[in-house]
Length: 217
Image 1 (cartoon, rainbow, N blue to C red):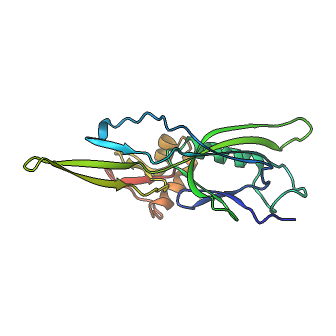
Image 2 (image 1 turned 90 degrees about the vertical axis):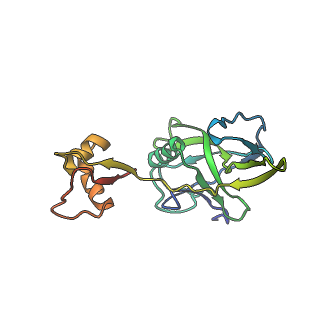
Image 3 (image 1 turned 30 degrees about the horizontal axis):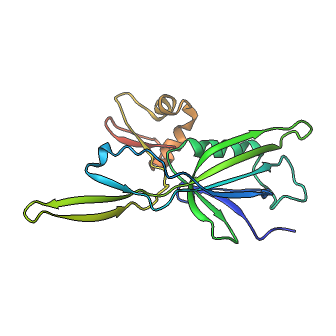
């Protein structure tokens, strides 16, 4: 029987999604340590407010090679694709949206650790363990001192979580063309069509020196 619970990861403002095909048998929730070092050199005269430690989620499951009675839905991605996706998200600088339907878990996280392996006799199925850490925007208390009265005004600033991936920009050089740019920046000349589509370019795909082009992420 299909469970009411669904485990979802979404990325880049919900543009990418991954639903776990097999639910974990156990799900661990814990509170991390408050002892964190924060470099505030670039923030000026600030203090960092941390109301509570971050929540840590841990669980293990599998990405199956084929369907079996414990699978939550059909046409799930290949196991290798699921792992590659999680690794890419882990290595990015952006948080992931983690949702478990049927619960109150709807939170931005980072992947702290990801381990996976293939067990003999179960070819193509990848067994994995993952640890997620709650991502929270830092609340900054900016202090402004009124020198005439000697009083301090404290203003709280909390940045809203935004996991949209920002496109990288490339400045067109003399003699550049899309095929050459794709090879130089993406190590794959065949991705020139992606650059053209991302920038709204159509045949004959004319570009000019000093023109700014968005690059696929």
